[in-house]
Amino acid sequence: MSHWNTLLQTALVGTARQPVPAADGMAGEFAALLQSINGGEAQGRLLRAAGAVAVGRRAGFVAPGLSPSDAPVATADARPPLAEPALQAAIADALASGPLRLQHEGLAALAAAGLRLPHGLLPAALDAGRRAVELRPAVVAALGERGLWLAARNDDWRYAAGASEQADAQTRWDQGSLEQRRAVLIEQRRIDPAAARERLAAELPQLPAKERAGLLGALAENIGPGDEALLDAQLKDRARDVRQVAVELLQRLPGSAHVQRIQAFLGPLLSPAGAGWQLQAPEAADPRWKDDAIDPARPTHDSLGERAWWLYQLVRQMPLAWWTARTGMAPAALLDWAANGDWKDALLRGWNEAALATLDADWCDAMLDRSRNQRAWTGQLLALLPRGRRERHWLRELGESGDGVQEVVAFAEQACAPGETPSAELSLRIAAALRARVERGDLANDYVLRQVLGDAAALLHASALHLLAGLPRAAEESPGLANALSDTARIVRARQRFSSLSSQPTSSSSSQGRP
Image (tube, rainbow, N blue to C red):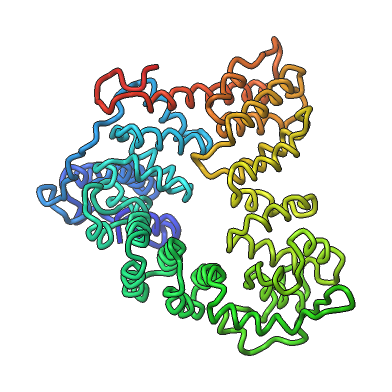
């Protein structure tokens, strides 16, 4: 156990029940520091030691019992650090208090320019990645060798510990972080899918559930019939997340045995009725369902009834193409049919999840055209569409007068992954609508709009940022209004600085990042 964890355990149980751990076994000057503050009453000793160790952890202090002369040394960095003070300050500010999109943009721009974070910003970046899983790939890409070295010396930063950036694929697979190993698999799947699958199959039994689920998802790259056996075996995995990944991937193989089994369960429930179709839910649970990751026990908090719960699980595992082929109806007609039936909640929920698993753009479009009653899924469905098809829905929501701007920004926030923006044309329309709202004074009483303004500043295409710069200020502003406008201005300035990185040479000179 690390000295920090021992101190934490003492704090939890109390110094009356467990003594303050001594610094025995600690090495070098850090041990001497701990000894020098080890006086007075127990509570004070504990707090002083915790303060010192907390600072030492952020600096990657030498592990207990390890001689400084034996400590591993970071590999020399091939990339120069970011040296421009204004850009350093912008990235530091983003990591400290900026939205995730701004943090991602700064880190990604840095890596794309062939630069790395200066050493002083490594702890802040590693902490940001600890808080936000979706930020981790951008953090790792910007760390450099010293950052990878530092990550291995703090349990909170272990997600970024991995092989050297300069290592070959085999070394990154053997020693890399989860992100590095997943990248190796995806790269190999593009060249030799079978070899990548065999590599994964050999490793899966030794991995924890989180890594099994993360690496199994790499089979989505170049997925084919040869992957069926491995995926089918994961339906019996003890971890729900792993089973869910396997189900979603098997849906992309309509000829798989799993899909055929689901069809055998679901088919008898759908029958012709006059000129239309009739659907029934299962009357009882089938003991064979357990082999296909179907849970007969309805969660107590779920809004569906028991039969609807069983039906929903079958529907979400069936490829959507089966419904159109079986009924002869297009997605829009099927949605209308479901809306008038007894099992509409189970069907709509199952179809939405099936659309997310199979990436069916036609179904996504049809669902979004009827999404007024399905707002919970709107952002996820939009994320699956190509930009042009996605923005058709946003333009309709925005309206000619821009009245729907708040809803469009909210859905675009959900649909656009970090680093992705709406098109330049749509961004200009959104920014113009927001500026008009600010100029007519709507921010004074619209607290949601204040949040939307900052979200838009971090989200929109860089070519639209000038419309959100220099927004009008009033002589008298409430603290909340003043903060909203100041935050927006800070985000715009930072993004304009980050965009300058792409035009700079990869040099460590002080001119980096200057417009």
